[in-house]
Structure formats: C-alpha cells, structure tokens
Length: 196
Image (cartoon, rainbow, N blue to C red; front, side, top):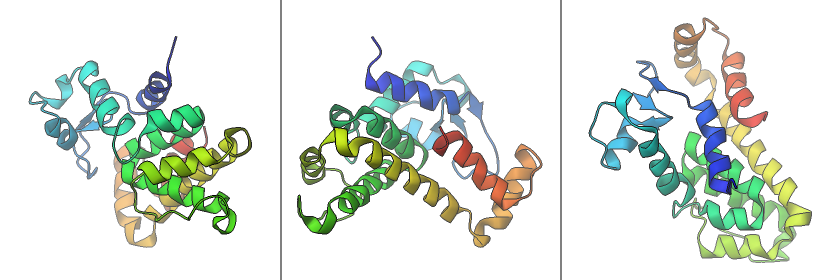
C-alpha cells in the first residue's frame, strides 16, 4: 500500500526528472530534482549525473518530508492532501517557505484568533503550528487550507517573476524553449506545480 510520502515523492519525481545542468539555473546541476549543494550536504560525493534514485529518495524523506521546519508526516495525519501540497512547495521553494504558507493559512482560517492565538509566521511548523492545525476540523478546513497554501505557492511564483527578473526569465526561456514572454515563464511553474 502506498503511503503519503510515496504519493508525494511520485508527484515530485514526475516533475523533477533526470539529470539537468543548465548554466542559467541558479541551483546548478540537479538529478532527481536534488541540487548538487543539497546532495553534498547529505554526503553524496559522486558525479551528479550518477546519483542513484535511492539517494535522492533518502534526501527527499530527510530534508523535505521529515524536515523539522515542516513535519509533513504529522500534517498528513491531519489531512494528506495538505501534506502533499506543502511537501511539493518545500521541494520547489524551501521547507521554511512552505511552513510559512501553512502558518499564514492557519491564521487566515482562525478568524480573529478565536480558536488559537495567531501564529508568528516564522517558517517553523513546530509544536504550536501543529497544535493549531489539530484544533481545526479537517473535514471542514482540510480542502480549503490545501487550496489556500496552493494559492500562496502560485502567488510566490508570480512575485518571483517581477520586472526585475524579466531578463533572467527571458534568458532561461531562450535556453529551454524559446519563449521570451515573462508571463509564459510564470505559467510554466503554475502548470507543473499549482494547476494539478
């Protein structure tokens, strides 16, 4: 039986396929969606193009699923789809950013701090954040909180693609598929990660 982590991983690996070493990508060489910097941090010393899938899976579990800033397993116990959404945001952006999305969402649905004291949005989904999550009924809030976090992910993509980034976006697009339109650049992120 496929668990929540396996579902999250399958979705991410479907997007983050194979070895890529694009000179215009600030992340540098990646394999299975794992950057060289992250691979080295986890002790992988081989060539990135040779990194085994099993190594990537172990990194995904440790740094993105069981990450202390974003405990996806606990979130999955509350509402699986939310954990999958936050895992993907964490992989693509950073677990701290995804944890911040969760905190903003919890504060939004906690109208006027009626259910719990509003959370400090610090990118650390620790005990207070998980306790706040558990005060809400997943049948009532799960779907909407997931959609809210997905919306914040989409908004962040749009913010990244500001006029200041327009030349970088245009350069990236020329290398990848010839589109020089900033809006289409942002829509590529939306298509792969938000519009699922």
